[in-house]
Length: 296
Image (cartoon, rainbow, N blue to C red; front, side, top):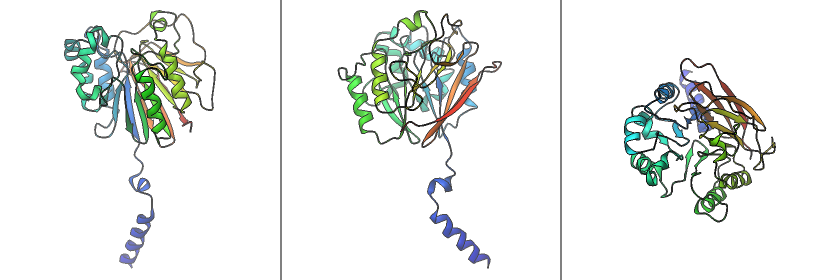
């Protein structure tokens, strides 16, 4: 009797999808931009936070640029970034920021991250995480649609992608609630990147540059609300560099803003949806979370 019951259970298991047997363990992507300055304790605080939020064997860490201050030199990476976020180096997918270029040719960045900084030979690249396509772009170089190497690569990569869900990460935001310098100096090409991403139904854009956290409602490239297929933009410039003062002006369609605490954002990436959660460092009280379906 017992043997027959066990055989019946085994037969049912064989018919179940492998994902159900495995329990569909969530895949997480976690990170921030504007990270390591030896003059600030913020990067150490956010690094401790990350340690308690991820599985080093399954999850991935991203950076949204300005990895090491003040100049992104080899010394800045070794002495400032290395002791904090450097502990996640083997699972980190980095992006470039303007401070990384303060050292000629971003030499410190490329020297520190090595092959992970340009796995496809460019300063921009793509990788799969779970069932998602993640695009790491470079907002400090030419991104014109159809004219630049990056613009053509982006369009070709999305054209060939079988993924239902995708997100893009780079440094300079298209939208931000500030009239200060970090907003005014965004490259014009960022709008072109948005147009390509919108055309192919990318869900999320993550940026840094502004040292604060900001979340926007889904928008089209012209900054108009588009709840059906718009891109949801997050600014997560809270990795550890000194935070900005509250903005002088609120951007259209802003849903959440905070510049009171360092912290990181964690995405749970599902086959057809995603959830986000912002975690503050110890002592911080600001929190943000939500979820949404993929556009396609």
